[in-house]
Length: 276
Image (cartoon, rainbow, N blue to C red; front, top):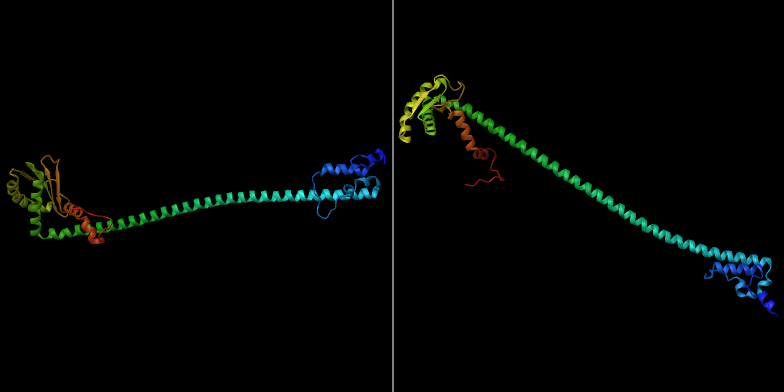
């Protein structure tokens, strides 16, 4: 065989339609492995037979190579699809987890707000109930004090008891002022009783204080006629006043004895402690 004949039989030379397609196939898929179910094209097995192929054989080889390329492309496409699916699932999981955390944080914040509002409402309701109880207790105490003031008339109704009480009230007023001149005011109907109380109180005052005193009974200004009784004692210039009316004495006694009164009415307060 001549060198020219050998050159024509070389599949790597562009001597025919089949060898050109072969070179194109090798350039496109230089490292492709043979797909399963497909055999290598005959050109690869017997390159010296290229020149003997007919057009039908060439078409068959072209179809065979096209199937081979399509198979390779399908595998690449499946690989890309699998990778895309994996990346999609990862991204979807990340987004779902992020949104889940946001939702949990949102509802946790809402729950805390609701709990805080509930505590505020409960505290407000407790305070309102406590204030309502305190108002009811104060109303009851005020009612009792008013009832006690009405009962003071029983003391005034007994002249002997009332006279003894006026004696003490006038003497106490003098000792609290310790003034050389004192003015005493009383109800109009008590003037005679007060005059007797003053005459009895002056000697006792002088013994206790070792001082002299001039006592004047106010004949122009009096206590209200509907007052319970008692006296008001003023200094000579009327700048200092000692209220010894029965109402004021009752109010002072109620103020001093209020803890005992509350305990007697409502029981001991566990939240309040008194130290002596």
